[in-house]
Image (cartoon, rainbow, N blue to C red; front, side, top):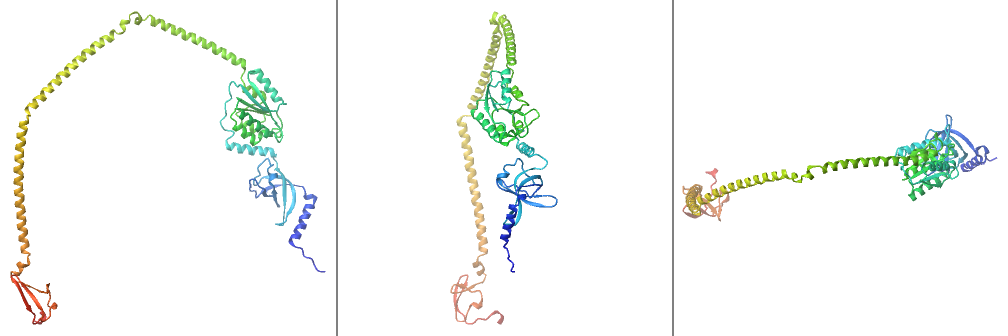
Length: 447
């Protein structure tokens, strides 16, 4: 019987069908440690789940991963719910994760811790806190219209500061849509811009009930609000992220109302007390000014006003006398100076200066004439000396002692090698030139 061979694709499809049809593999609960995890933003996540004896590949689609309340990390122990199937192209089986939560720690607590760490690093908890207005006119309350929170706030504000206006913004404070509703009402209050204080609150409950106040979008909306925010979420032992980001945290809604408004009767008593102190201070100042006025009125200045300028009159006389003396001294000094200048002018008449200039001109002309004569004599001596030196170096002087030179065709002959027999040459003497013809040439070594 001939064997029938399967293709790899056919075998893989068969195994995949087995995986998909097995009811025990349709929903599997696994626990293990995350391995090979690299966060891929806004995409599907691929990683492995392992224990001491084995490892399985895992994939978590983007839609399921976005629902997680915590951030998976390498080496974290988790609990998985998913289905097992075969990946045909690679021939490997893997788990498609539908739900995941930390093993040993609740997902909400894990998510809360991670969000606190993230916002803490960004400085949302340590940022500058806005001061609550001392006498608010309008207070916005973000809470449920049917809970005890709004009743407690209304009761407390009416008892303490009834002139303040409370405006309720009905808000979902529990459930999946509560966070969006809280953010929307905070933004409405900011857009109106007519409120002095904002109270955000709800009653106590489990961490799931209070979770909208731990959402990142709520924390950022509170942090970005320009209106001072009082957070009163849960009981005194419950601390949410909204409490940490808000400008002031109140343990209870009643405490939030007490922080938002003063006691009107106490403030009126303070105003009355300050009014009394102001009146007493004014009366004291008035008494002091009156006493001073009486002292000034009885002063000699008003009874004998001429005494005010007695000293000034004496001072003026003395200054006038010193001024006259100074002017006389300056006048005499200037007069002596003028007399000295006139005497100098008389001694230095123009005729004397002309005579002195003529004498100096005559002296300079004589000096110039003497210098010119001396200069010409020196140049004459230099010329005579140069002529004598040139005469000593003259060729005619040498030829006068019996020397001569020979030329051929106006070229000076320096050697017998330049001559040929029967050639015409000229012999130059000091007193004339001899034309001659060469008969014979005898070199020096043949003599």
